[in-house]
Image 1 (cartoon, helix red, strand yellow):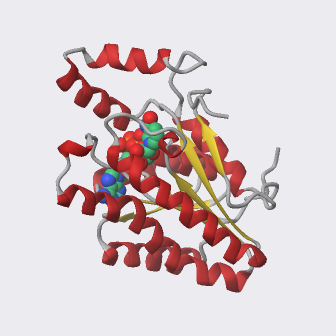
Image 2 (spheres, protein in one colour):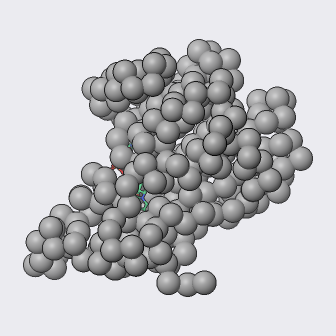
Length: 262
Ligand code: NAD
């Protein structure tokens, strides 16, 4: 299916690795101009080179720490200058630190607030006015299944990602008349560095090896396997498509059936 995305300009945040990288690749495969950003210059260059080789497009890359407002402003400025517009904004972020309520300090909460919620607020604030002028836009936030079913030991994710969902639903109502959609993807257990790090963290406190923890995660999924980053990315590309223009204010769970609720 042609998703009608040729020539659209997309900015995918936190995208040198994992789910963000897979999203950048998926949009590049659809013919989008793609901009990626994260904190690490070497990783960005490596990802940009890989995308260029695979899809024959020249991605823009920007070093950007999502905790820093100035970095976010600079990134949007650079992308607007190079592409002349941002049609699609994918708000991804690094996962907040794991931990139970009893483990967390004041600064853990502040850091997760900045990274998970305020990065979405800041990028979206900078991008929406121009989308309104051009009367077309797609904003897609990457959250987690934790917005449907809180996950043990992920207090910060469980808390702030629901804020993103509330923001998206409210904003979708405000901007729908400008042909801008705002949606969320909630990934389940997906095989990336983040998942590996979480398994190692749990291994330290549980006395079980991280390999066993990863295997247990897969067993808890009705599909009996972990997700692949490309499977999350495919849902994002669909939400970005022309065909998805009547879907807004929604959260699509991509989890192999892990969430137990209806
Ligand atoms: P990952 O660790 O593999 O990749 C994270 C990306 O974010 C990397 O490119 C990293 O450089 C970048 N990043 C991290 N901190 C940053 C910062 N402060 N500023 C800019 N860039 C930063 O993670 P992933 O598994 O791809 O997860 C992406 C998001 O999806 C995370 O928020 C994660 O919590 C969420 N998620 C992941 C899973 C999973 O199973 N992998 C499940 C549900 C939700």
